[in-house]
Length: 69
Image 1 (cartoon, rainbow, N blue to C red):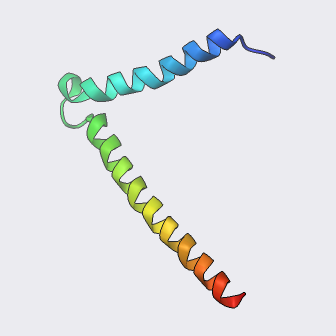
Image 2 (cartoon, helix red, strand yellow):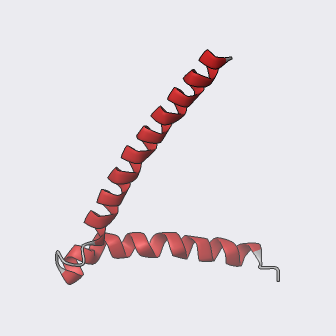
Image 3 (tube, helix red, strand yellow):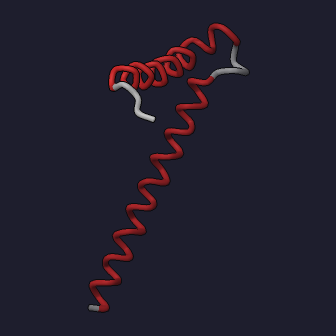
């Protein structure tokens, strides 16, 4: 099945904007227990940490490969 490009764009914008809106106002609406903004920030910080570690591992493996060759 083929979707219209405008429907795809609208659906994509909805799927990006609605979670951001919910995360931004969740501490006000539901208190600290349902604070999606803090959870998203912690997840992002964890992701950045693991990305840096994996880039370091990649450089170590590339260095080992260059030493062998």
